[in-house]
Length: 320
Image (cartoon, rainbow, N blue to C red):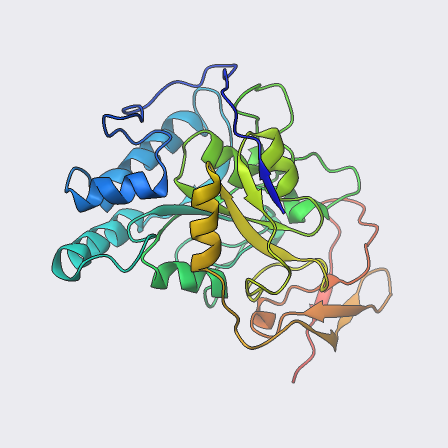
């Protein structure tokens, strides 16, 4: 399923332009993956200069200016990663189409680095013990993991009346075309980040509509892959039968490049396990990802009636 609502647009609000505009003259703003690769191949740009551009956009537009709040945190090691990829390109050539390309990751997908994975919640703030499989594939492809993108907290399962694009850690995300309109959800930050040129590519997740809805609203391209086409290990889960990550980009071609690069399987699938979940003295059957069960976070397979941010769950994941 593809949503390509990228039309000619007039942004509303104070979206200050930072850095050179894209076009036939080699700028970065609105640049596609093939354009960025050509600029690096010709030595006009480097992975570092491209990463610096997007970091400057985030600094200018995320919590300043229009305060888009599409990004929760940037990767403190992003420039070092870019430098290593530049040296590798010079010594051996690029690994593939994602070499040196910055990517923002929705904050419910594990990254084993100095960024926490929280689903937008202070209650879940912790660093992952290993990369999600799709993040590991990104690193293998030579991408720069740039930042963690904001989202509707707990991917919309925090509360039945949650606000699209709001999380405790990231604040209220804003639509870059009309700052007083919804950015959609739950992958709001991933959509806004590509629409506002805060990153070259991003990854969102969807159970039902969480990629396609914000892609449509923010004039981006979103694909929900067939469940299982991308590995789901290392994602904060909601539904065993519906969850998947997927690409969010500015063009259909970029979405296809990202989709193909991460298409692979761990050889393992989500399977039912029994976990003891103490919540109002109830025990539920839950779905636990066998790869990331150490997170200690378990989500009910059925839609829970959550009653607020301060609801505490005492979770004891089952052992193999």
